[in-house]
Image (cartoon, rainbow, N blue to C red):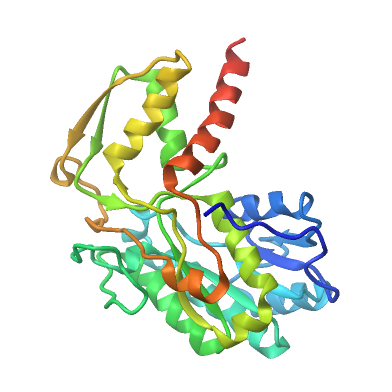
Amino acid sequence: MASPKLSSRPGTAEGPILVVGKSGQLARSLMDLAAPYNTPMVSIGRPELDLADTASIEHAVATLSPSAMINAAAYTAVDRAEAEPDSAYAINCDGAARLAAVAKQRGIPFIHVSTDYVFNGEKPSAYVESDVTAPLNVYGQSKLDGETAVLDACPWAVVVRTSWVYSLYGQNFVRTMLRLAATQQDVRVVDDQRGTPTSAPDLAAAIVEIVRQRDQARSHSGIYHLAGQGETTWHGFASEIFAALSRHALPTPRLHAILTQEYPTPARRPLNSCLDSSKAHAAFGVRLPPWQTSLDRCLDRLISQMELTTC
C-alpha cells in the first residue's frame, strides 16, 4: 500500500497542528507536508517552547490555540545518553509529560513519538504493541518511561513507536553511509541487528493522517507501531544504499559484514528492532510502504544533490 495521503482541505478550523521540535528529521518532514496538502502547521522549539518549563509550553499553546499537538522533540543521542541520563530523561520523559499535561488541560489531541529501543531484541519475530518491554540502554528506558508518563498525563494520547528513521535531513544512517562512501574505500557494517527502516516523510504523513482522524484517535488511544514494511540488517540497508550509488556511477566502497561484538558502543542495541505495524493499519488505515521503495525515493534526491555539487 502506498504511503498515507492527506486530503487537500485544511485539517482544522480551530487552529494549526503544533509540531513540537524544529530541527529534527520528523519535525522537518512534518513541516514539508503543510504547504502541499494545505494543512496548517506550526513548528516550535527552544527558546519559544522549552520542555523544561511548563509556563513556556502553556504560553505557546495559549498563543497558537492548536487543534492538535505532535511531539517530535527527542533526545536521540543513544550512546551519549549513557553518560547523560539526566539530559535524556529531561526531554524524553519529563518534557513529554509536561506537553501531555497541557494537552489534557486544554482538551487537545496529542501524538507522542517513541522508539523500537523499548525492546531488548530477544524476540525472533517482529514486535507487537503488547510485547513485554525491556530496554537495553538509557535512551530506550527514557523513552519507555516517557510513554508511561504521557499516557498517565493525557488519557487520549496516541504514542507512535518507530524505528531506524532516515530522511534528507540531519544525522541518520543513509546520510552517514553516503558520506563514508565518498571518503572511504572499505566500510564495515553490523549484519546481526535486524530492523525496519522508516522514511521520516512516510512516518510524518501517517502521523498527520492519525491527527486528522482525531475522533478515532480519542477512542483508539494508546500505543501503535509505525515503521516501513519488511526488514533488513544494517548491512543490508547499507548494501541497498551503495547499490544506488553504483547505478549512478558514483564511488562505491567495499562493504564488509561484521558482528555487533566487533563494533562496541557505549549503549547496547537490540538485535531485533522489527516492528509489526498492523494495529495502526486496523485502527487508522495507515500503512507505510516497503522500506526499499521509500529508500529509493530518498536516495534519488540525495544523490541528485550530490551530483549537482560536483558539477
